[in-house]
Image 1 (cartoon, helix red, strand yellow):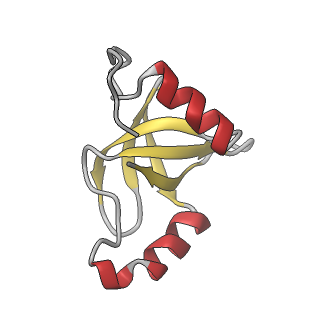
Image 2 (spheres, helix red, strand yellow):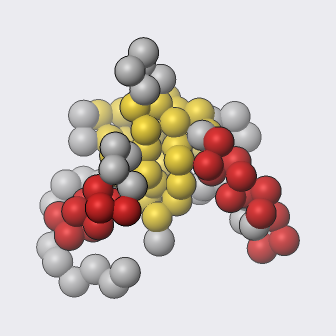
Length: 96
């Protein structure tokens, strides 16, 4: 979705982007990848930085997209995050 609104949250998410994420994937939170490797990522959230592992939905999407040559998020990507009740954070998907 093209962004024409001002973005000032430090994550690159406009309010309409956040509303669209909430509509399409209730319970997921906006974030941005700071650094990443094969087992997890350091993500920036509205509450600060957090360590995250890759969620099952991202792993499945990566397996399906393997032919496209892009398996993992890269630094700077906007991502959908899940914060679990017991504390961990997982990256559930990359947002275009």
